[in-house]
Each structure stands twice: as structure tokens, then as C-alpha cells.
Length: 322
Image (cartoon, rainbow, N blue to C red; front, side):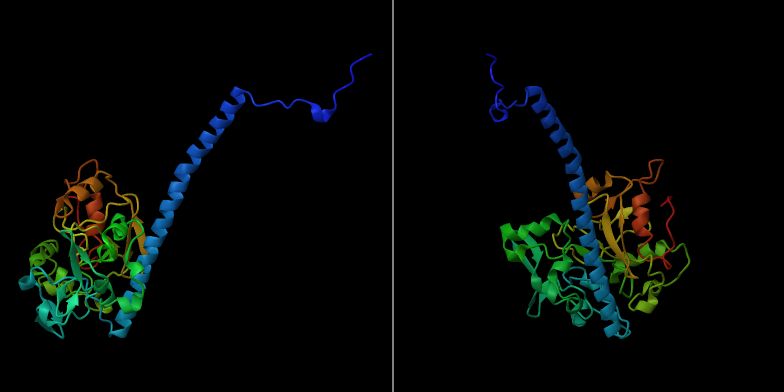
């Protein structure tokens, strides 16, 4: 008598072979290898969008402040603690020292004095306090301290370990030539800015941009950008040497492929460094980094991009021969 056919539900299940498991694991590894870089790019892109949004909000506040003050722009200065003898801040047609101007129009108040505490020293490092941001001329129009911090800023996370006062309060600086009566309102910069004029102007007053109407080329004029000052907080406006390829200040090197900025017309943009080695030089030197002169590798192209956006329409565009 033949054996009966086994009932289907009692059939022995066939397992995966080692070869099949290895194939599956290999496929999963390939998929992960494809997804991880994509996720990183998407995440980085999201941070860029947020950083640009912050600067767009700052520029909206910048314009609102001007509209409320007869066209008068905020001043890019933040700190009166250095070089007071060389600084001339024009108020009502008169040159007055910063200590006498009541800090009028300064966008951030990162200084101590007169009952105001805008800076604090913790473990030997100086930080801006929240009061430096909230007392600044722009804050009533911005409304949130978070807008002043880039999501790419690595020092922003210091708050958790060093206490709330040690947080990185601000990742952005304003162009030192925007909202001032002379370059950086510091007489030390008069000579290099005039040297770059190639004899086209005879008086430093040509750089005056205290009102919206005095900005010659708002769509090309740099307004804000990410900066990582060695002082931890970004002291004063952002400045670049206009007559030679020297980075007095530098853009933040956190994203060499997407340095974020805004322009005086309220638009925003990003810039990718042509020479990626430049970011390492910025980090090592931070201030007064001398970029090699232009050659076949295009070393000075990055300096030229930012330099030509300091005061376009007034300062002639640079040549690679600088």
C-alpha cells in the first residue's frame, strides 16, 4: 500500500541558505551606502535653507528699521571696546566718539558700560550675552534671538555644557561699509579703501551709506554673512582688505560649498569656494589671512568675489593683479 501524501501543513519549511543571506545583506549594505550620503546632503541643504531664512528675516528687520527711522540704516558696529580714538561715528552731521553717541543705531550692543552688560567672560573666553542681542537696534524688528544663530554654527551647542550665558548668540555680521559714514567708521581703513579707488574719488565720504538712498548697488552689495570670529563673538562689522588679497575677517568655514549671505536688496545667496584649501587657512589664521596672488589655479578668485561685493557702484571691481 503506497504511503499517503503528506498534508501540506506538515511540509518542512525551507530556510535561507548562507549564500542567500549574504546576498540580502549585501543588497542592504548597498542601499544604505546610497541613502546615507543622500540623507546627509538633504540635511545639509535644510540647514542652508534655514540659514538663508535667518538672514532674510534680519534683512526684513533691517528695512523695517530704516522705514521707521527716516531711511537711516542700522550701524554694523557691535563693540566700542577697541580703537575708540580712531573711530568717527557721524551723527547729525557731526563726527562724535562712540562713547558720546548713546550707541544709537548699533545693531548689536556687545559691550559693557553704563549699566549695560553685553559681554561675559567664562573660563577665559568672552561671550555675548542675551542682552547684547535684545538691546540691539534691530531686535524689536527681528523678535527672536534664535534668528541670529546659524544651524551650521558649531559653537551654538556650547550652551548645554558651559551654561546659558556661554551660548553662541550670533553667527552673522553686517558688512562694515553698510550703514556707516566711512569704511568701518575707522580711520585705519580710509587709506586702503581709497587706494582701491584708482584715483576715481578724492574724499572718503564717497563711502557714506547711512541711508538707503546712498546705497549705490543694493542687489550686489553684501549685507550679512556667516562669520566665525576668533573672539567667539563676532566683534564689529565684517571687513575685507580692498586693495590687496588679504582677508581681514573671513566668512565662516563651516560649509565651504555653501557660504550663506544676504544683499542690501533683501535677496540671499550662497557661495562655494573655488579653492577648498582656503577654509583651512581661514581656520588657522582667522584674521588677516593673506591669500596667494592669482595664478592658473585661480587662488584669488574667492577673495575677489567677496571684495567686489563690499561696496559695488562705489568701489571699482578688483583685478587679479592685486
